Length: 205
Image (tube, rainbow, N blue to C red):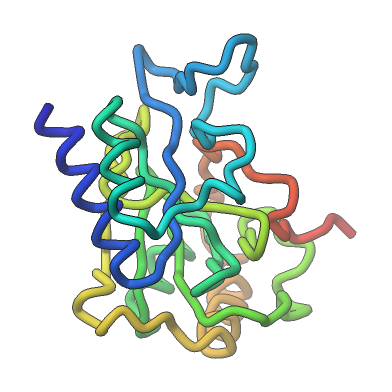
């Protein structure tokens, strides 16, 4: 009950700041259950098939959804912000260098909320550690539980008046750190939620 209320409060708070929220499948026994018969997805994913249309800002509808079950909280990207997702030590270092809301999905998936409308810079394309989430994609938001632990804020949006980061600064800094990372051991981590097909993963060369 307490976990469900925490998720509901978080969803309402995001919506209060015009961040569209989507109910996510419930974590149960190490896998995610969306209550859709025959759904093959066992990683984190939306609990509703037409999730883009169901993205919520209305507090009454949010209350209705999260009264039913302890759904995860997903944020629809491409509306108020885009998200640059960066894996591993590069993400951790990037979080210490840029100003903007940053969430982390344990153990090593870092999500940087940025103003929208910017493509990936060329130095970031072709890098499997980087995903740009835009319209048609989503991310899990704190305090959504994952098998590896709950998503949490590293830099809370409320500490920044809910302002996304400057995308050029985030991407340029990420590119610099990725170049430096060529000298580090490989600490890439496995993605623990389903990447929507419309997320802009850097293409392979």
